[in-house]
Length: 123
Image 1: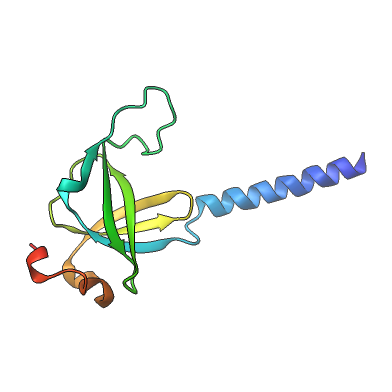
Image 2 (image 1 turned 90 degrees about the vertical axis):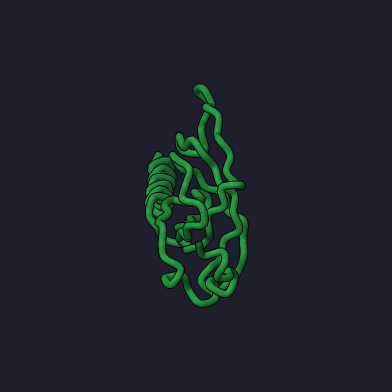
Protein backbone atom coordinates (compact mmCIF):
# COMPACT_ATOMS: atom_id res chain seq x y z
CA UNK A 1 0.00 0.00 0.00
CA UNK A 2 2.88 2.32 0.84
CA UNK A 3 4.42 1.70 -2.61
CA UNK A 4 1.20 2.82 -4.32
CA UNK A 5 1.30 6.16 -2.46
CA UNK A 6 4.95 6.63 -3.41
CA UNK A 7 4.24 5.90 -7.09
CA UNK A 8 1.21 8.24 -7.07
CA UNK A 9 3.35 10.93 -5.41
CA UNK A 10 6.10 10.61 -8.01
CA UNK A 11 3.60 10.70 -10.88
CA UNK A 12 1.88 13.74 -9.35
CA UNK A 13 5.15 15.64 -8.92
CA UNK A 14 6.22 14.75 -12.47
CA UNK A 15 2.87 15.90 -13.87
CA UNK A 16 3.06 19.21 -11.98
CA UNK A 17 6.62 19.80 -13.24
CA UNK A 18 5.59 19.05 -16.84
CA UNK A 19 2.55 21.34 -16.68
CA UNK A 20 4.63 24.13 -15.14
CA UNK A 21 7.24 23.80 -17.90
CA UNK A 22 4.57 23.59 -20.62
CA UNK A 23 2.81 26.75 -19.42
CA UNK A 24 5.97 28.72 -18.75
CA UNK A 25 7.93 30.37 -21.53
CA UNK A 26 11.09 28.38 -20.84
CA UNK A 27 12.69 27.19 -24.05
CA UNK A 28 11.05 29.83 -26.24
CA UNK A 29 12.85 31.10 -29.35
CA UNK A 30 12.33 34.35 -31.23
CA UNK A 31 11.90 34.26 -34.99
CA UNK A 32 11.58 37.22 -37.32
CA UNK A 33 9.59 37.37 -40.54
CA UNK A 34 7.95 39.73 -42.99
CA UNK A 35 4.23 39.56 -43.75
CA UNK A 36 3.32 38.36 -47.24
CA UNK A 37 -0.45 38.37 -47.61
CA UNK A 38 -0.24 36.07 -50.62
CA UNK A 39 0.61 33.37 -48.04
CA UNK A 40 -2.52 33.84 -45.92
CA UNK A 41 -5.23 31.18 -45.63
CA UNK A 42 -8.66 31.58 -44.15
CA UNK A 43 -9.17 28.89 -41.52
CA UNK A 44 -12.59 27.22 -41.45
CA UNK A 45 -14.39 26.58 -38.19
CA UNK A 46 -13.81 23.08 -36.85
CA UNK A 47 -17.41 22.90 -35.47
CA UNK A 48 -16.64 21.25 -32.16
CA UNK A 49 -13.44 19.48 -33.17
CA UNK A 50 -10.23 20.52 -31.42
CA UNK A 51 -8.98 23.74 -33.03
CA UNK A 52 -5.18 23.94 -33.08
CA UNK A 53 -5.28 27.49 -34.46
CA UNK A 54 -6.69 28.79 -31.16
CA UNK A 55 -9.88 30.12 -32.71
CA UNK A 56 -7.96 32.28 -35.17
CA UNK A 57 -9.62 33.11 -38.50
CA UNK A 58 -6.43 33.29 -40.58
CA UNK A 59 -3.23 31.30 -40.87
CA UNK A 60 0.15 32.36 -42.27
CA UNK A 61 3.03 30.08 -43.23
CA UNK A 62 6.12 32.22 -43.76
CA UNK A 63 9.89 31.83 -43.80
CA UNK A 64 11.27 33.11 -40.51
CA UNK A 65 14.76 33.60 -39.14
CA UNK A 66 16.38 33.24 -35.72
CA UNK A 67 18.68 35.94 -34.35
CA UNK A 68 21.64 34.16 -35.96
CA UNK A 69 19.90 33.94 -39.36
CA UNK A 70 18.81 30.28 -39.36
CA UNK A 71 15.72 29.86 -41.55
CA UNK A 72 12.56 27.88 -40.79
CA UNK A 73 9.02 27.96 -42.20
CA UNK A 74 6.61 28.80 -39.39
CA UNK A 75 2.82 28.64 -39.36
CA UNK A 76 0.83 30.86 -37.01
CA UNK A 77 -2.72 32.06 -36.62
CA UNK A 78 -4.18 35.57 -36.47
CA UNK A 79 -7.63 37.01 -35.98
CA UNK A 80 -7.18 39.40 -38.92
CA UNK A 81 -5.13 39.99 -42.04
CA UNK A 82 -1.86 41.67 -41.07
CA UNK A 83 -0.26 44.72 -42.70
CA UNK A 84 1.50 43.76 -45.95
CA UNK A 85 5.33 43.82 -45.66
CA UNK A 86 5.28 44.47 -41.90
CA UNK A 87 8.10 42.87 -39.94
CA UNK A 88 7.08 40.79 -36.95
CA UNK A 89 8.81 38.97 -34.13
CA UNK A 90 7.34 35.57 -33.28
CA UNK A 91 7.79 33.92 -29.91
CA UNK A 92 7.84 30.16 -30.54
CA UNK A 93 7.65 27.39 -27.94
CA UNK A 94 8.40 23.70 -28.49
CA UNK A 95 5.13 21.75 -28.89
CA UNK A 96 2.93 24.85 -28.43
CA UNK A 97 4.18 26.72 -31.51
CA UNK A 98 3.79 30.50 -31.82
CA UNK A 99 2.54 31.92 -28.53
CA UNK A 100 2.80 35.62 -29.40
CA UNK A 101 3.79 37.99 -32.16
CA UNK A 102 4.55 41.71 -32.30
CA UNK A 103 5.09 44.07 -35.21
CA UNK A 104 8.57 45.62 -35.15
CA UNK A 105 10.54 48.05 -37.30
CA UNK A 106 13.23 46.94 -39.76
CA UNK A 107 15.99 48.54 -37.65
CA UNK A 108 14.88 46.40 -34.67
CA UNK A 109 15.68 43.20 -36.59
CA UNK A 110 18.95 41.48 -35.65
CA UNK A 111 21.72 42.11 -38.20
CA UNK A 112 21.74 38.48 -39.35
CA UNK A 113 18.01 38.75 -40.08
CA UNK A 114 18.26 42.12 -41.86
CA UNK A 115 20.63 40.53 -44.40
CA UNK A 116 17.72 38.37 -45.62
CA UNK A 117 15.63 41.38 -46.63
CA UNK A 118 16.42 43.99 -49.27
CA UNK A 119 15.47 47.66 -49.15
CA UNK A 120 12.66 47.01 -51.66
CA UNK A 121 11.06 44.51 -49.26
CA UNK A 122 10.99 47.03 -46.42
CA UNK A 123 8.06 49.03 -47.80
